[in-house]
Structure formats: C-alpha cells, structure tokens
Length: 167
Image (cartoon, rainbow, N blue to C red; front, side, top):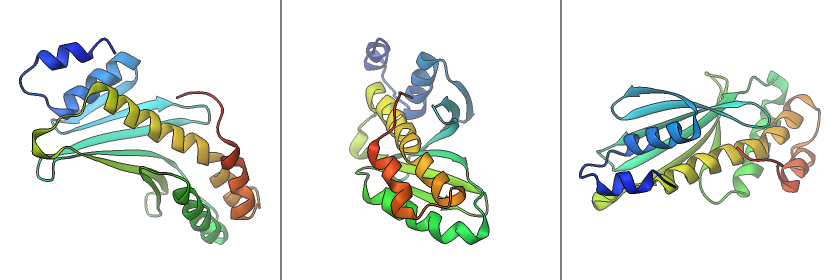
C-alpha cells in the first residue's frame, strides 16, 4: 500500500493513526471518537457494518469490533447461539458474540502488539477485511436460523459454501 512508507518514516506510531490512514485510503466514513478509538462504516454485500478499533496501551492490544443489528425472535435465541457456536468453530482468528442488551452481533479480534511492536497498514487493512468477510460469510446463516426457520446445521450450509464478493 502506498501509505506504508509514510508511517515507516515517522517516529511515534499510534495504532489509531494507522487505522485512520487505512480508512481514508478506502474512503470509508469514520469518526475519531478519541485519541485511542475510531469508528467507521464499511459497506458489505449484505449490509453496512459498524467497525470500531480501540487501542489499549495498558495491555498493548489493538481491539477490533465489527457489529451489525440482530434482533431475533425470542423463540429463536437458542438457534442463534447454536449457529454462532458453529460459526466460531469455522474461524481461526476472532470470534462472534451476540450482545442481547444492545441487540448486536459482533465480531471481535485483538491484535497484541507487546514490546513496542506496531501494526502495519497492511495488518490493519487485513484485520478489517477479515472482520467484514466473516460477517458477510455468516450473516445469511444467522438470518436463516433466526427468521428462515432453518436448523442451525442447515443454516450453516450457506456459510460453508462461502460468500461472494469483496468488502
């Protein structure tokens, strides 16, 4: 990526500055909420995802949360959790969680940057792309399990086939 060289010449690399440069490069709408946090909207095939990254200097971790609204019928909550467990069994990095109070499905990932390491723009770009790709891949399965009347195993057949398109 062209913006990589700009960061390698800088002395103090703040992870959220790198995230902001990636967002600008992709022309995503974003808001620098605080020095250590940024929120953006990333358009996918199924919907627009809310992506938030936050830097914790205390534990040297860049945390990513990719979320979307999920308000399943009460009688399908069990099916949603079972589908979510099946989805988490099929991913290597990151995990889905359902936050019932906020009515959100979230994809969480933490990049540990201990010992003064820094995230490259390519790593940040990959983190965001992987989060949106996971959401895109499993969104139809969550929908089928909640509103399509499919069993979690049947709903996951859509995800196993893979999502088409790019974030």
